[in-house]
Amino acid sequence: MTRQVRPAEQRGSASTVIGHIVVLRALGLGDLLTAVPALRALRGSHPTATISLAAPQWLAPLVTMIDAVDRLLPTEELAALPHGAAGAGLAVNLHGRGPQSTARLAETAPRSLLAFAHPDLPCTAGGPSWDDAEHEVRRWCRLLEHAGMATDAYDLRLDCGSAPSRSGGAAPGVLHLGASAPARRWPARRWAAVAAALAGDGHPLVLTGAAEDRPAAEVVRRAGRLPGSCSLVGRTTLAELAGLVARAALVVVGDTGVAHLASAFGTPSVILFGPVSPARWGPPPGPHRVLWAGCLGDPHAQQTDPGLLRITADAVLAEARSALSDGDRGSR
Image (cartoon, rainbow, N blue to C red; front, side):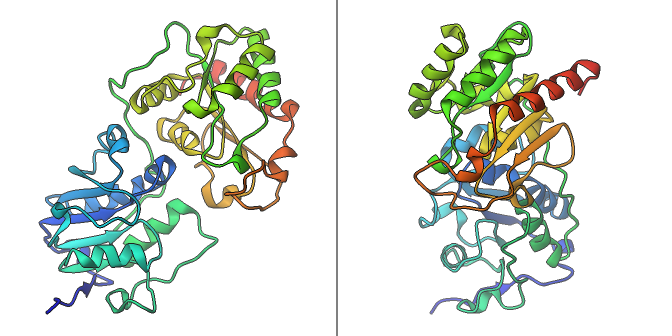
């Protein structure tokens, strides 16, 4: 007989002594970083608990920087959770609205479960309702507040500590060319125009991205007349990429995980939004500049989003120069 999973109490559970908390967030880089305030709220509410995060193994270097997670349970999106997730005092769904993700947590037979309400899952009865328009950081904070936990949606910062960096000398500007879907990839020729102008101003630059971004990086490097050494595309580990972003003078990036790294380290950034509104995934207040044409689209489309194409190289360059000028006038 399957034991009934009890929904987490709406009030007072923050003071309950819980030995083990399992959190599901088996998604990507930006998804992990937008969940940092919620993870810290769990730690603050349950300081003696062991907090296990079910997430992809490749995110491990950043999980260690959150200072709110005791161990990583390697898993992939919506896969059955590892044995170490079984029987927790509290399971928390920071992955999605369900039902699949919540059902995966319920399979581990926790004593109680905290998730957004879903009509097909009695174990979510009394949970808060999902709001599609809500900012991703605020969404997960609200879930924990529903259970009586205090949150700070601006508690996004990470300490990169001794994270390795592949750069030396003056802090470079990082141009991150990649994105997980073609819809959010700005054209290489526009990147090249920005790179050429910033290099002409005397700013050292580094190009980053995944291995699949190497052809675009070569276009940017050649058209921008940049040395071959400036391209680290496909050549950094996640820890090295984090170190680069943490120490950069500026990051210019699309709506992707590296934009959230800039927020996590307080690095000035210029973020190019395309099919998704910054009201849902934008940075916190700080040295971050957002460009968005105001058009919504399909973030998974196989062609560059029309709204993203409305952002010109001149507009990006103006914001980048302004951000670098502000950085020269003060320290972070």
